[in-house]
Amino acid sequence: MAQKRSSAHIKAQKEGKEIDEYMCFFCCRQFKGNHGHHIILYSEGGIASSDNMVTLCPECHREYHNGKIKLDLVRF
Figure (cartoon, one colour):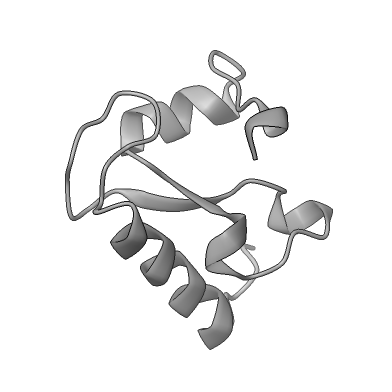
């Protein structure tokens, strides 16, 4: 069962998407349904903060989690 997201987590995702103007980091698709993704994964101790978020479209998000595309953490 998926872990329930805290209100701070949801707020950080929304803030991150607003900062990015809902534009996907990889493909630049601008879409209100894009996802807020943790740069340092939440499951690995990443904080719920807009500073730790990047906006990804659903397709790029799926490809990221399938290992087809990668985030260069040095850029952050």
